[in-house]
Length: 524
Image 1 (cartoon, helix red, strand yellow):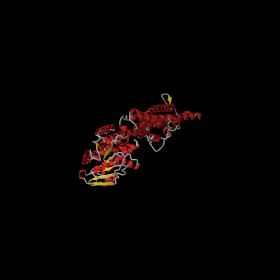
Image 2 (cartoon, helix red, strand yellow):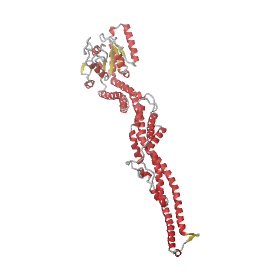
Image 3 (spheres, helix red, strand yellow):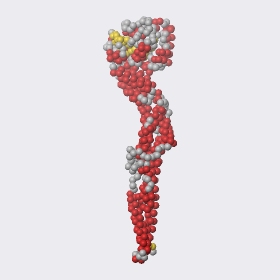
Image 4 (cartoon, one colour):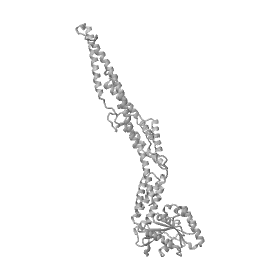
C-alpha cells in the first residue's frame, strides 16, 4: 500500500543527503525530520487512523470530541483554556506503541466496532495563553494522520488560523477537514453567509478541496456528515500514507526553490582552454619547454660538437638540472622553477572564477555561489600540485643513437687533425737540428700530407659540428613541442582534479538533487 510513498521517501532521503551543506540548513533539517518521522510512523503500520481535533480557544473541540466518542471523556468548561493535555478516544484494540510515540498518555476505549482502528485526539488550543499548550498542539499537529480544524462563527477568519496553519499546510489538503461548530447559535441566513466566507478564505489558502462541515456538537446537527467522513477514512486505512505524502510534498517543494528555473551551461571548451593556459603559466611550463630545447642543444653539442670547443659548453650548467628536473620524473622533488608573478596568479584566479560563472549559466540561487565555491575550494593546493605535476612529467630527453656515431666521427676527425699537427711539429723540430731532410715529406696532389691531415681534420670537424648543430636544433624544436604537449596534459590533469572536476560534480549534484526532489514531490 505504501510502495509509492516508500519510493518518494527514498528520493527525499537522497535529496536531503545532497542538499546537506548546500541548501538552507533549516529546510534540510525539516526534510530530514520528515524522512525520519515517516519511517517511524510507517513502522507502526496503517491499521490505526489517528485523527486530531485542532482549533482555537472556545471553538468547542472537547464538546465535539465527546459527541463523536459518545460520552463525557474530555473535560468541558466555560473557563479557558480547558484542555491542558491531549486526550485520545480509541475504537478497537489500542495501539499503545503508536500512542507512546505520539506522546498521548490519556486514553479512553470506545465500545463501537463501526470505526475499529480510529484514534481520535482532542488537542490543546493552538492559541492558548499557556505556552506549553501551544507547543503540545503544534507537536501533535505535525504527527497525526488526519487534522480536523474546529472553528466557531466568531473565529473562523482569524489570521492565526489561516496564516499560521492552514495556508502553511496547503500541501496537506487531502489530510485535513474543516468544521464550523456551534451552528445552532446562528440563524440559517447567517450560517450560509458564514459558510460562504469560510469557503472563500479556504480557496485563498489553496484549500478549496478541503471538506467543510457545519455542525453543532451540542445538538448533534450535522454530525452525521462528519462521522461519515471519519468512517470513510478509517475504512480506507490510508490516512497515514496521505498525511506523510503531504509532508514529503511540502518539504520537497521547499527544497525545490533552486530547481525552479535556469540550467547549468557546464564547462565549455573555451573556458577550459583559458583555465589550462593560465595554470600553465603559473606552473612555469613555458620555462620548462624552453629548458628542454636548451638542454637538448647543449647535450647534443657535447656529444656531437667540435671536440676542441666542447669544454666551453661543458662549463655551462644543464638547463633542466638547474631547475631540478631529472631525466627520470620524480613528483616528490620540488623544482626550482621561478615563482609565478602577481599578474600570472591574477590571470589564473580570473580564469577560475570566470569559468565557474559561465558553467553555472542562469541557475538560480544558491547554485552560482555553490559552483564558484566548488571551483575555488582547493585553490590553496594549486601551486604545490602544479609543481608536482611538472616534476613528475616524463620529458623527452632520451639520448639519440646518432649522437654516439657523430661523436665517434668527431673523435676520428680530431685524431686526424692532431696527427697532422704532431707531424708538422716534428718536421719543425727536426728543422732546428737540420735533420729535416732525413725524414721524407709525403705529398698528395702536390700538397704535404701532414698539412692535409691537419686542415682536413679541422674542416671536417667544423662541418660535422655544423651539421650536428642543425640536426640538434630540429630535434630541440621537436622535443620542446612534445614537452609542451606533455606538460599541457599534466596541467590539465591538475585543472580537472582541483577545478573542473569539482565544478562538474557540483552541477551533477544539482541535477541529481532536483531529480530526487521531483521524484519525491510526485504523488501517485
